[in-house]
Image (cartoon, rainbow, N blue to C red; front, side):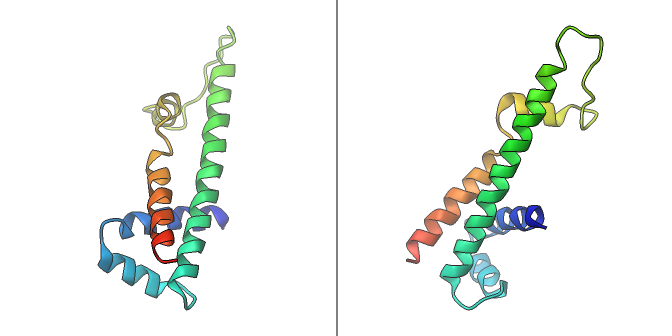
Length: 112
């Protein structure tokens, strides 16, 4: 459930970024009364999601590199096109989520 909340926090941040109308709609729709508290919650959930995702991609990368120890076994890609492995190698897997966190942090600070 925490993974879902974190993913939704990033999605809501993406929808809010660049749209005052979306910011208002989303903040009004979330449970609670104060927008400031709602933003703090979104920020914390997004941070936890990025930490989880970074840990996961680090482990996938470590598994991928340890599988190339000279044995004949090849790692099984999570998708046929190798998307996850390519994202891990390029270090771009959490870039969008980090940008959303930066946006949510700025929005939160502006409302303090």
